[in-house]
Length: 306
Image (cartoon, rainbow, N blue to C red):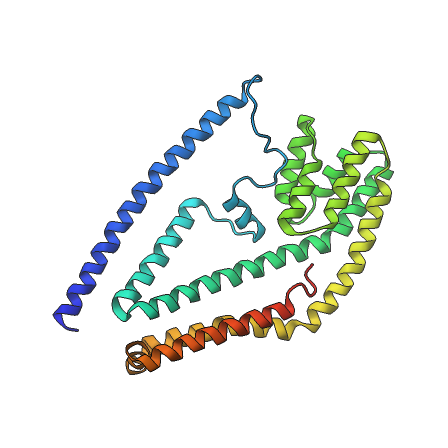
């Protein structure tokens, strides 16, 4: 490499280092502000004459926590910041060595891979919920038939539930022990994982706690309907497995091949990046790929999932 190229890469690395330091300073200042706000909020909660916005009816608090919880991704804020910093450095190195378009391709590949991974984990969580809910409803009914109260039956049935129910079980136990209304937790959990059947459970629990009506018919109906839905879901997922795999392949493979060919074959990359014809080919390929992904994804969206 020439001295000019080395000088350019050195300047780029210096800019990356400077940006990294600035981001770290900003992150530490923001973290201190968040901790200070948490301490103030905890002190205000000790006061009975100050109105505090109720957050006990939510399974997860912040938006970032809810996004990670839906896919069962257990990463702390420093770890997420580190991943973001590594991604930024990788894209900046590609930008310094190969140019703008390869850096955009690498960035799109990283974003598409992250989204597909999150989507895969989220669907796994929902599948576990749909498979476990009928058994949980039956366990609650059995405990109620044995003479236990509704709250004790819910706690006992959710005690041995899969790990996806752990946040709901923790909040449910805290609400019942504190004597608070726990029906909103099922509403928030249903919105979090898009499980409409839990809305029926929440309405039945709220009606039973306020008017004393029986909750058993609703729980029995939810269990039977979920079992029938699971049978249809398995059939749909098996019949659309090839189409869903094609959609994922069409999302990742073109971006991966483009990044690989641009980084390995310099002459091919020069034709695409430094000529008007290459720019036109890249634009047309990007548009066609995006249209193909959207069409195939719409074909499989909602099939065996909702």
